[in-house]
Image (cartoon, rainbow over all chains, first blue to last red):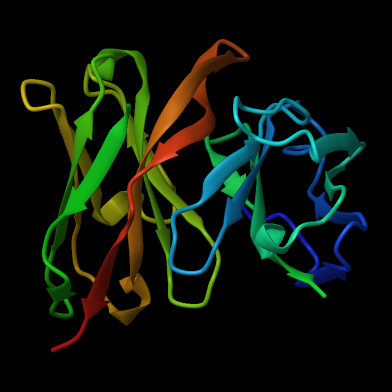
Length: 111
Length: 125
């Protein structure tokens, strides 16, 4: 299984919005509504931010939203705050081997 | 509050076996899939595999021939053994709790909602 494709970096000023894409195939992102997004600050464990494409776990601000179109999922962070600066990884169920696959990761910088 | 803690040697020699244990404080240990994920320094996340309390496992095909994940329900622990390690296996190893979901009649991990802090494993002679 190949990793899902994410842009290496994205940036925005405080208060602005930033969108991160996660591109797969019909065998993973496009075939199932089981896309998750994780936020990882330096030296820390990943934190679940979005699951099943667009659902937010309890405690995650509603500034974080997810969507999907075809083989591409997206994470949008609205009203950027300094603490949103982190690496973000998508993950999708990939059928076949009954396994998930992670994205390549995107570093979000708050300017 | 659910907590996971990885433990094990931080240094493993090439060709030897990497062994890690994750201790879980979760009263519902039998309700989830317990997972291992790793992250080489400066790189992205990679699924290793997961196990159910019954011992049923799913492994990343790229590691399957060298990998064993086991569970000890009496201690709320699950373990990872990766044989014949090389420098490519050097990484931060995380354990995590996976929410199970049935997809096309097969039970898989929907998402990882709790993670351990991670433990760095170096492979060097």
